[in-house]
Length: 404
Image 1: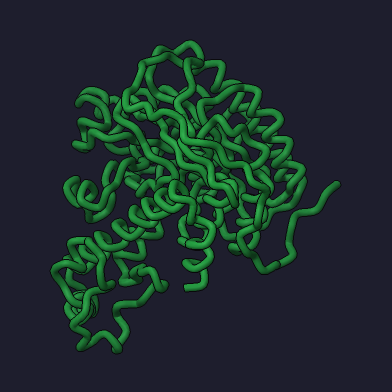
Image 2 (image 1 turned 60 degrees about the horizontal axis):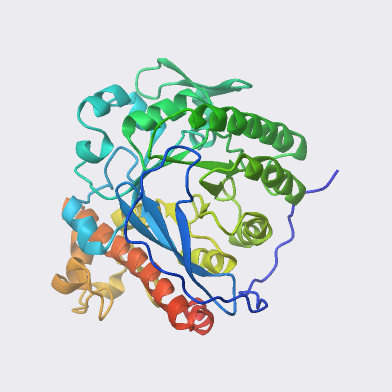
């Protein structure tokens, strides 16, 4: 039996053979189709020195330019942010959580109020996770069975059984644009025996869920999730079993649950080339800028993570030269913005000194302004990536960025 990857290595963006192609015509419309219909993804430009690509994911609520980053709106809101803040930052899509919305306020309530877009006043695309991540994050209050995941609510202790079919029903009630198949997200580190057992469950659930989804008339698009922990042969097996099911897109899960960046990159570099080029690829939970840039070079199209919002609320702010802790005394009398030239509302109106004062004083405004800047940084990082791929300078630009 194979062993998991444990060796720590230094990583640079790998130089690849030229695989470029000329841009194809852009589609600025969405043609409705039911499950199993036309592909939702179109590649507009391939980078010539890496596997990076620019594309469009077409949904009923608009197009998503890729590569792109999805801010996390677990409970139907990006913490501390209003809709106008997200629009001003250039956000194209957010991701909410099936488990949490099922518990409160409940998918029936949300459906009665017009679906998640209407409920949270967001008319752009929305993705939802199936609740599989909670198999990892809420390990103390869940029980994994072959038929699904039994949760004991963290709110009132009531039992909720998530199956490969009812998580699809919940997400369809929410009217999500991109929905996820039920999976088990194993922790790190984990033995190969349990990793394989867990993977077999995820594959079984993927098959059941895809067959169930096939009968649904919906514009929602279903992603299959590739698990396998840090064992390459299990990742390969997952791809071999799940890709033939012909999901609308593929997510790579279970590699942002405590592993070091080197290991995240190894699994990304191994797994992405196994996935079909014609479908969008989503790397779940990876959010460090350097890991995003690396993953884009491997051909990843979508990302999500709580890093920009969680760090924004605690004073860790991102710049092109790296992250800073605004609470440090060095910023006590600094009249400059977080980053010169940044177009976010925070940098346009406030100094580092004022922000530090707000954070040190535990003012609620600090969390709002910090999050505004970080979300803007991440959305514009993705915009820069897309522009560099299109104009053919991504390779050189990415190396310079990583040095900073």
